[in-house]
Image (cartoon, rainbow, N blue to C red):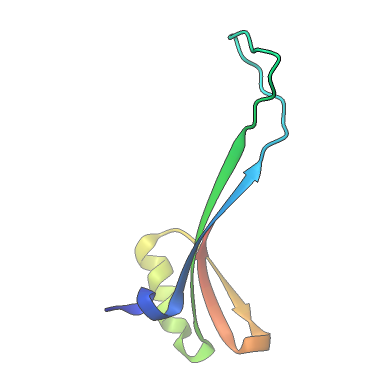
Length: 79
């Protein structure tokens, strides 16, 4: 199908947000859980394909690139 079928990951992290919220509404005594959703997307390729990763970042005008020297890879990611 495409590049993302084999080389990409999409992850969603859901965490409990412990910050206090100010509200005009009166809250009941029951505990309210507030969750934060953090989506991320990454494409990891061999370092020899770094031009393709840089082209993706230029095309979308977002994201960051980092090198994974341990695995001889380059990663384009959005968080």
